Amino acid sequence: MNATLLIHGGAGTIRREEMSEAREAEHRAALTEALAAGEAVLSSGGSALDAVEQAVRVLEDCPLFNAGRGATFTAAGSIEMDAAVMDGMARMAGAVAGVQRIRNPVRAARAVMERTPHVLLIGPAADDFAAAEGLELAAPEYFRTEHRWQQLQAALAARRIALDHDLPARMGTVGAVARDAAGRLAAATSTGGMTNKRAGRVGDSPLIGAGTWADGTVAVSCTGIGEAFIRCAAAHELSALMRHGGLPVQQATAEVAEVLVPASGGSGGLIAVDAEGRPGIAFGTSGMYRGLLRLGAPPEIAIYR
Image 1 (cartoon, rainbow, N blue to C red):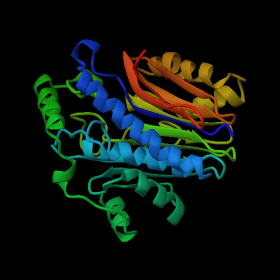
Image 2 (image 1 turned 45 degrees about the horizontal axis):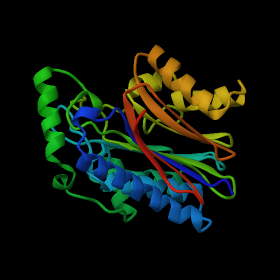
Image 3 (image 1 turned 180 degrees about the vertical axis):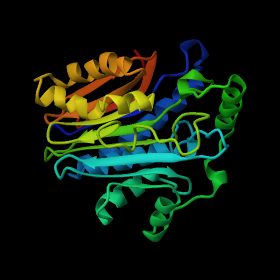
Image 4 (image 1 turned 120 degrees about the vertical axis):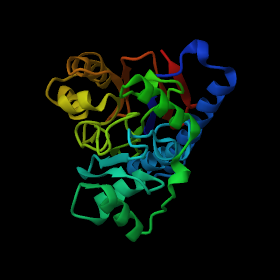
């Protein structure tokens, strides 16, 4: 069947010396739950698109990660979330950016893909679209977590814009890629962006070909300094390295994470799965929260190298 699900919870992790057994167990449990949600879809013959949506939805609901409930704050003290999905077989995509009221932005991204002729909706209009489509909304208090607020205070004091792994409580963007039993590929990515970012800033996650991509060759989800991933069209470049350069998925993933993204002025990581269900994982940070599931085999969870 070669059904495969690969997830990430952001590149850059809590340093080993700061990671207690209890904190590590919390992260592993959240990643395991996300894999289980995707596995339930794939094991019943469901689509890769359904699997990545369900896996990301679990991570959006978990305050440990920088998406949905655990999203970071802008310099203005607001929360602005981005998300995207892409169906590789149909070559269809949907995304939202700068949303503030949608409990699960990944669901809104899929609704844009399936219920509109567009690819990307932004800001209050995207929130209104989600409400009109019956998606669950949440008040600002739902998204506010104390550790994210303290991250903003630290970033303001340091006068810097920061990725999660540059500050205490290092958690990040979430994403999932999958290959289902029918050979279909899909990708999904969701994020709260960078702490202390300018209000209105949009990163790579909702930009198709930058932070999210799926076609008949590979599905890709990225995490890191979004501007760098945008400059090199990272997710699409990985596909091009495979389609035109003949690189296997792991080599192409490493080329993007370790060469192209740093050359574009950033760092981070990405996950990918090819048409045969082979995974690719690479990151230029001390670690990346990640999980791998192959149907019929135990789930694999990892944080550090």
